[in-house]
Length: 252
Ligand code: BT5
Image 1 (cartoon, rainbow, N blue to C red):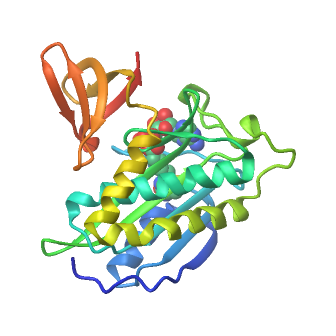
Image 2: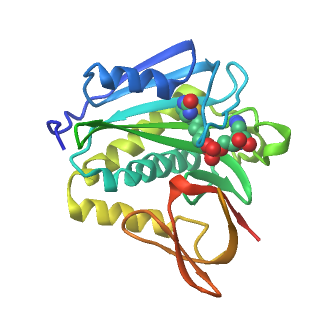
């Protein structure tokens, strides 16, 4: 990895409108902007999910934010950046709304079986070295997502009287990420982060149906290995599923 150690500083930019906060931050990363940039937007005109899917959100309704990280780790550990942001997002929802979402492998926050938030991590390389990881999170605050997506929002599940303020929510996500950020730079820290992710991952112990591009199978989600792959026990043995390949993992 090429970067210097993280300075501990965040620079938060809040935009009225952008195509995608992830695209914006990736662009900044390519221009050499240091770690710590955080970009949020009231509205995305081309918000992105994984595998060319769209992330929808009406103007001003939800939290849409991306973080520029330059951790001292290999590309193989970049999935832990997703975990760090997802865990920070879950903590923030607990602190401000009194709900404790669980992680759904590889990149969602769920309340019950409903999707409260999604995380999208994208990596940038310099030669063969990891140069940056851009992690975006969309947390539904006031709008639960498209009708057919099975989503929920904090307004529908919060245990608190007051609606959640998006800027305060971002501040809490930043605080939760600050608590975990240095874990990414050392093997012991990365193990601790991976353990926390496994403890708070609601996918483990459930029967799941995995849909890949060319096949589908079911089994018991039994673990997540150090490379971030989901282990699924099937009649034919243990399958390892990479986040990049999976179209859907559903409880079944
Ligand atoms: C994700 O993708 O869940 C990652 C979403 C990341 C969004 C953030 S917002 C800030 C940053 N900038 C970006 O451009 N992106 C990131 P995936 O697992 O592929 O889920 C996408 C699917 O979720 C879509 O195909 C819809 O079915 C559904 N969906 C779309 N908008 C939703 C919403 N607001 N709430 C719940 N589900 C939604």
